[in-house]
Length: 232
Image 1 (cartoon, rainbow, N blue to C red):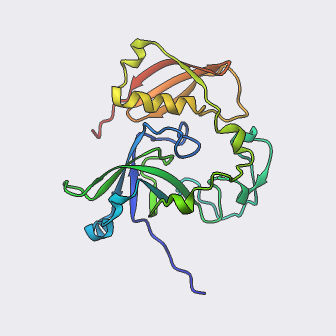
Image 2: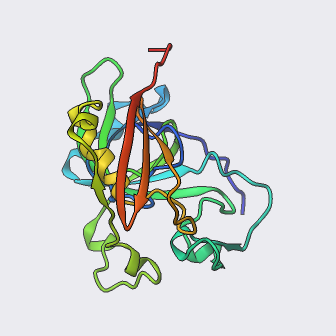
């Protein structure tokens, strides 16, 4: 059977400028907004007809920083401590034969009448800024939701959340519309599971650098500084 070369139809814009700090799965930080920007040849309004009748989307995307020419059959999921191996097909690892990712997001707004439209605002994405998107598909609850499904090692980790502590003065260093999204990302514990010490971690979030430590399942935010971006 003949194979076909696929190409990106869009890319995402959001506050995740680096891999560290991105939620481990979609829907873990629902206050974080992302913009799906389509390339010119896919901006035909007809392609979006009827999309407003759905609430969620599947994004099929490229793990663009994880390309490899070597097939790795075993991987180490972070939530298993970074030491236990499972088969790559039993994981969501980005190091896959074709580097394809799948993410479920909520449609917040479909914009059809602005300068760079059409574009879609979504919440809950777990993609890094500028990640290429190969396709979008509507989420159909009757087919895509399986309440009795088993999630293996992810079942025990889904409810895992850290507590957050930082001063009101530090909270004022970041815009109000960004604050809750940052809190949800920190609650998701960005650290590798095999690291459980008092080191200071630095996380990039939008135009800000956030420094924090974790003690007894509590994230202590130590500093938030705005980054000077000469391109803005």
